[in-house]
Image 1 (cartoon, helix red, strand yellow):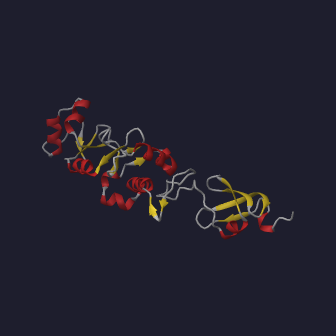
Image 2: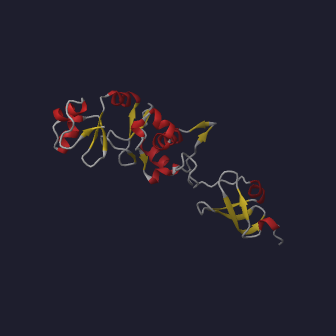
Image 3: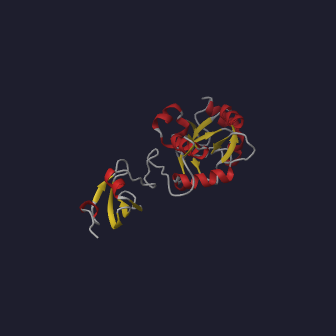
Length: 220
């Protein structure tokens, strides 16, 4: 069997969006094993796709610089429409990692998604296992379980109705800096103070600018 010159193992090819890849082995023109340089992901393909640079690397973080599609059964689109899981995933990553979004919504500046949820397939598995099946629409929320939480993760996220989410968003928010310099965005001041041995009235005075600090806590 004569192997084409550009398909000899060790040959390097450039893809359109996923960087360089290397030919690892050649069995026949539609059974060529390659490895992507950026992630180390290996797959089989055909010579035409390799030459045209059409191969995709499902582990390349191309969504907001961190998210990748992964390998699995869950799809980003069905019938030319974005799936609910993919819409929730991409919106989550936008809230965490999009600087333009942070200009409009600065409370998300420190938000992040847990590493396993960078993989769409892992997120989608959790999404479809936990999304309510009553036919109503729900939104992903990260801080109802833990007030002030900044990390989207399977342990802390829940689905809430739009009305519940709007009600929470309309609640009065307090932002304080701890004696250690850490910022806290708070919706339930009484609960927050009770858990930390603070006086809610004194913290309220700090919030209104009538006191400079309470036990080292200051207004942001």
